[in-house]
Length: 229
Image 1 (cartoon, rainbow, N blue to C red):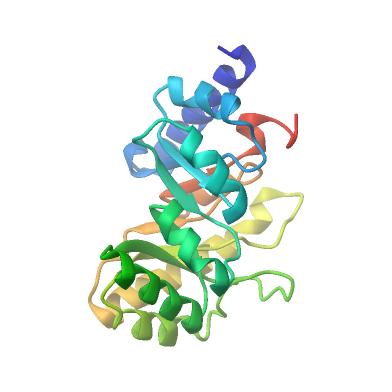
Image 2 (image 1 turned 90 degrees about the vertical axis):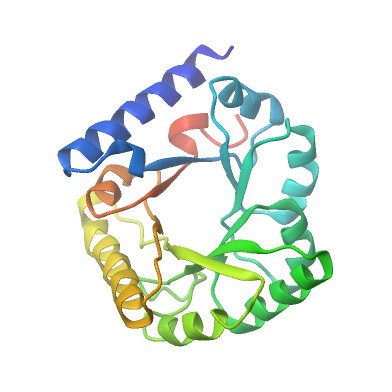
């Protein structure tokens, strides 16, 4: 077993627990999504052997090759920008799609799921920083999108996801995490439906995200090391 990878895994789990405890939360409320993009199946299996089953990928074509090489029983999340023409493959590969950010994509997922007879859990991605280069529904439009998506029988919205603007100081990401949590709370209150998941926080800033209510931290480089190594 890869010793450094095992050490990284246990260190991250310990930090998750400490961050949750500091925030007065139960550490079991926070899950680690191991972001395995560009990582060989052999390295992913090291984490699998530690008992981990929750993984994230951001490229459909890569996942189509990689996921079938892994043991059965994992939960795979799609976390990248999703083009509508990749919806068919995405619903075949993944258990959860975290990056639904527009109505036409939701409709295409519904269509593909109807063909398979499946339902799928999704999250709505919100562009909390208003960055032109990033995917995500604008905070002002997410309520409208949520209402529309709730009409689709094959999609179950379980929460929100965001990638805030990168800042060297992780504390500077806090306002964006607060913003996503507040949007989630407003949607729950206005529609009377539970949205238990907040996917926010990555290798650089996940302790701050946990302190603001994250339930799913997406960690790649802090776990696996630099991409391609």
